[in-house]
Amino acid sequence: MAGIDNIRSGQAMATTSRQPGRSESSRSNVNSDSVTKSTHKQDAVTLSQQGKEIGQMHQKMAATPSFDSAKVAAIKDAIANGSYSVNAEKLADNMIKFEKEFGGFN
Image 1 (cartoon, rainbow, N blue to C red):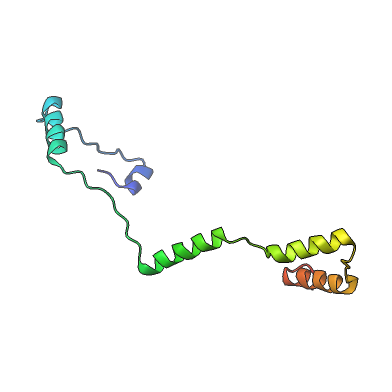
Image 2 (image 1 turned 90 degrees about the vertical axis):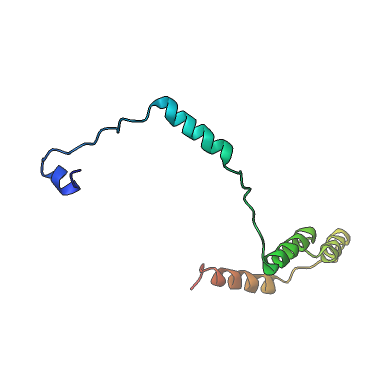
């Protein structure tokens, strides 16, 4: 068969024809015989002990709320009864700190 360089230079590309000798029926018999004789293997996955432990930690974390419900309840009560106050200076400092951490301010 011609190489890629020969094709680019305009030379003819040699082709190969199908090999005679096998008919369609003999090919189908070979294929069906190989299917019936082959054993079907199941894929299997095994996790390491570390992988199992990570899965258990993930399940525990998914079951645990991502916030402190007692703290949220206390803040709601303080807002409801009017005793919640915001320290504007502390809030501003935390906002600036947050922006610096994420590249908002230099």
